[in-house]
Image (cartoon, rainbow, N blue to C red; front, top):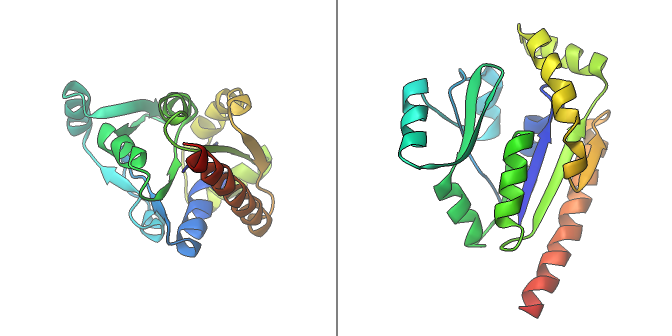
Length: 191
């Protein structure tokens, strides 16, 4: 199974993914290639990124190594084709934070191969601004300007969850994971 988590900056994607990874040994993180600089909070998330220079990222694109990529907040983010191949093996469950455009391509490519659970997280704009300030972001206007664009894609997800209470949100996601594990097991029995 692949669990996709998306949403605007500050909505709690990485915090939730970290909590899920700590609780479930059978869920592995799919790393994201990025040209952005590391944040102090990245270390809490089991090293979620492969940090590349812009030139290294462009080389991976030219060499056909990227499954998908997108420019977000003046940085590139993307997923390697080798990560998609790993998910298709079905040896583990995986979780991935991905942009709204990448989610469409990833879900389309994997839907017939593995169970895909896609979740879009939201939070009130005022709360997002508060969270971004608390983590030391300086480009809040840039991040908020992208929020409306991202919200326009929420309908492409299996579930939309408002993250007002972290513990409740994690419990909702855990329940969805269990539900989709049962769906996946039924599909495997039919195959």
